[in-house]
Image (cartoon, rainbow, N blue to C red; front, side):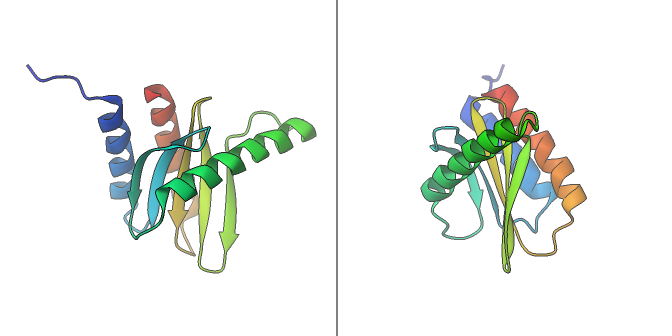
Length: 125
């Protein structure tokens, strides 16, 4: 009989599944809404602590914007630059999923896969 996987192992497995289904991603991480990294899968030397803090801050700001505009519950948002994008997904009330992509990403596939991952993360947290 095998022991059940820890929350950390399940979060890492969710990120691995996302990265396997979309190998072109530059990275993905799960953070608390307070900005603390919980799980990460980054391709380069990106500072997960900084990305987690910024993703949580952006999520909080996005929620406030949606509240102000009466747009309903925030599901996701993006920050784009010439060299790539960061997509930030709400993962329930406790978490945030940040996905770093290269330019020219298939956004339909990304949103489908990342939203499924965000739901999985929310159920784990």
